Length: 343
Image: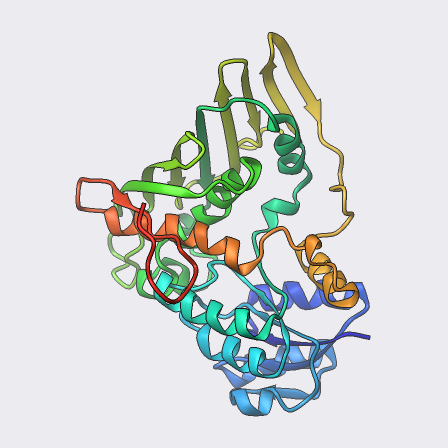
């Protein structure tokens, strides 16, 4: 039975614990800045260790560690895991900044541990199918949208809407579907990005400074130009992705409560309307795939390893940096900690 530790006992920590238990692995330790939260999750999981002390957290033997804490809490848990040869599952974003991401990657590379990042859309059947349909096709444009209801009902952790902690909606929300575009395009790398954003909702809630409306443009190294819309004050949430080329116009996912389990549009002159199977080809979600990779040593099960996820982080960082400048920002996406590659 695999032994797993969890850093971060919030909603995602609870969700991942359920998946870990369903797989047949065991959570042996829980860490959180709030002891009561760590104790609550540890009780549910049957873990003996619930602590705010990272050294105590590492006392039991672990095969893997899940990090669901806010983005600023990455480097020290990653360093501790790598020093002990513990495999990692890190929720998005992989780090709050490229500088910290490179520092994390240096430890991961040196330890040669399996380090996955929690981009679950790479395991979603609809986007796996869209990737297969686009293989070998020419695509010129990608358009995505992400909507959530945070500014309507505030049913989220407060830090989600605090830019200093979450990075804002591009890093906290848009990153999922932006990474998915890279995935369906064969892990294309970003070249430049620009974004505009505004907070024009809940102006009385001054503790929240994250924008509710974002418009973003970017370029990938395979010739694809992308646009992205993000709104975090909309009644009905979801993701949508649209790809356009000389002989195709396909849409996967939809907002506003419409069906999101079909791919529609046209392909080579023929109308396309295809339901998507309920499971991906692996029959595994991101957590189960990571656990199976630890068991078997099969790293191909990891569809978003830390090194590749750094390219998505670089796209996000460039877009955030561009806000308010009125110009595109070139992407520095070299994941290695020594030197900086500029496109």
